Length: 249
Image 1 (cartoon, rainbow, N blue to C red):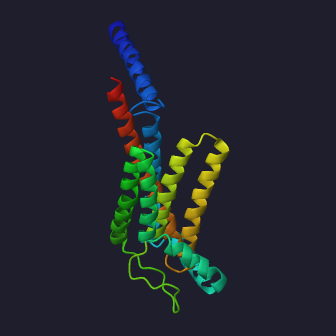
Image 2: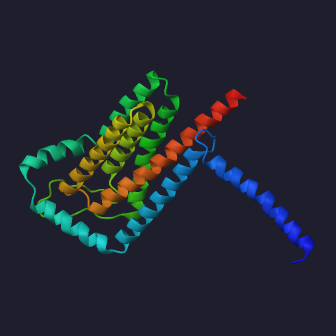
């Protein structure tokens, strides 16, 4: 390689590397305006989009997941028991659109009186916004619900993804995220996350047990809810950091 081009190439590499290091450092900064929270949020969004896309493609193409859907739906319907039907109905009825909105309203009042402004904004975006997104997806895919001769529930709306599971994922996910941020002890944080996951799983189980949804409906709703929650939390965290940076200038 001639001397002049070689020197020019080396100079370009030297100048380029600091820019790369600076960009990476900014994306990994815990306190940066577009720092680690954006990086983690973007990764979660892309992961959720990929998982949901693959699951939706399998549902539309009637892939193996739909066979498992039918097997589980028929198994639960054949093994329904009054001992379990009551609790499952209670769980599902308290997590319909109205139930989730009431719980979100109570949490919103708590955020308001605690002056947790950005958590309140995130709640307003996440819960109603997630419900609207779910309705849009239902009409895009227009999947029929499970059908039985003697159903426990009779519903005329579409099946994929599950609205109850979406609402539970967004609400309990946001509540867990807030508590993890304000509770200092790791043991309590772990219990909070496990509690949130348990509640979401119970809502999902109630929908499959009652014959209102297939397994893939509730799995899709969980992934959808996690992705949407990542969008909302990342956006509100960025707004908070941007405002704090302007105040400190």
